[in-house]
Length: 89
Image (cartoon, rainbow, N blue to C red; front, side, top):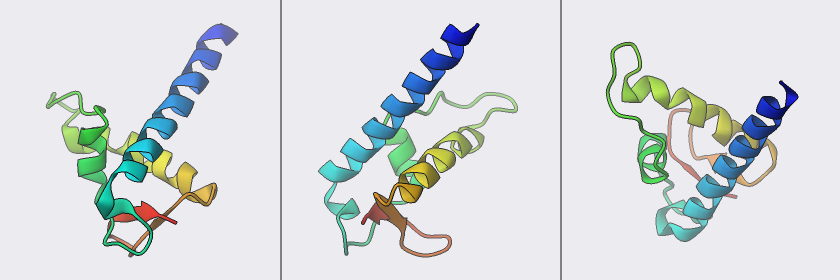
């Protein structure tokens, strides 16, 4: 069963790399710029499974919130304001 946990860890790592690369390529996400809200980042990176009962698109974004907090803890991104957009540090 350890193989599934390891595979999940690799998927999370790839997802973080994808989001970081996307932000590096986006003018809005550059240091000192206005930043980008989570939902456009979430959709642009292909994480939206669409609307499902009890699994709406907005609910699905919580996974990406944790991903962004990981990038933040690594000093790679920052949140412009408490409820605002994200950008590179």
